[in-house]
Image: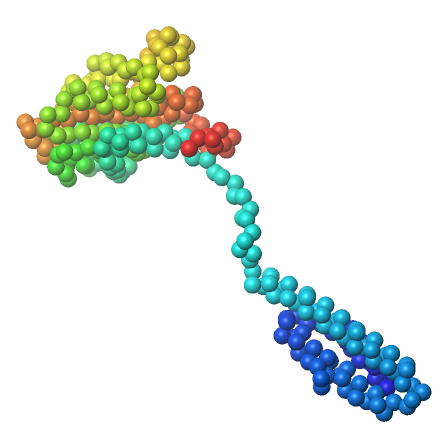
Length: 339
Ligand code: DAH
C-alpha cells in the first residue's frame, strides 16, 4: 500500500497541463469521488491495524499534495489562457512618436485656407504638360526665352512635352472646361532648368489664384492681396504694388509686403528698403481669356502667383532652398511645434 502511495506521489509531482481543460481532467482523475486518491481511501479499510496510522498519514499527505499541485496548475493555465485571449483592452497604449509636417506643406495649407475663406476652390493640373497650356495659351511670344531648353525641361519636342515651369498652366485647364464665375487656387510643383544652389532649385512650389467673372476689377485684386498679406503675415502688414510684366496679365504688377523682420524700418533682410517682394499678379490678358474660350468682352479676371518656398522663407527664415528637399530630420523636427 505504501509503495502504491509513493508511486502516486511521484506521478502527481510530475504532472503538467497546458490548458484549464487538461487541469480539470487531472482533477477528476485524482481528486473526484472515483479518483485515484478516493479509491485508496476505500482500500484503507483493509489495511492491517498496525499499519493504519502510517498509511493514513501517507494518504493524507498524498491528498494534500494532489490538491496543491492541481490548484497550482489551475492558476498557471488560467493566466496563460488570458494571455492567449490576447489583449488587455483597458490598458493605455504606448505613446507613438509624432512626425512633423513639412514646412512647405504647412505654408501651402495656410495659403489654401486663406483663399478658401474668400470662396476659392482648389484646382490641380498635371506636372507633365504641353506647350499650349504652359506657354501658347498664356500669350507667350514664339521667341520667349522661357521656351528655351535652358529654362525649361523638355521631355520631347514637336510636339512639345515638358515639365510645367509654373502653375499658371492650371488656369488654362480650368478656363477651358468651366464657365465663369471661376474662383480657384492651384497649388503645385513646378520645374525649371536651374543649377541647384542655396537660392535656386530645379523644382519648387507655387500657388496660383484666378478669379474670372463679370466686372472683376483691379480693386478686387488689390483687396484680395491686402487680405492675404494680413492673414499670412499679421494685421500690421502693408502692401505695395509695382508695375511689372507677364505675358498673361495686363496690366501686371509685383507685390511687396512691408518687411516682417524689421517692420518696414529697414534691415539686412530687406536690403534696407523696408519691403520684400512676394508675388506676381495682374488682370488676366483678354487674349488669354479668348484663347480659353471665355468672351473677354463680357468677362474680366485677375490672377496671381507666388512661390511657396519664398513665403516659407519669409515666415520661417529658411535661407537655403536645398533644405526643403534634403529630408534632414534635424531640420524637419524644428517644425514639430507647428500645426
Ligand atoms: N507664373 C508666374 C511665374 O511663374 C507667376 C505669376 C505672375 C502668376 C503673375 C500669375 C500672375 O498668375 O498673374 O513667375
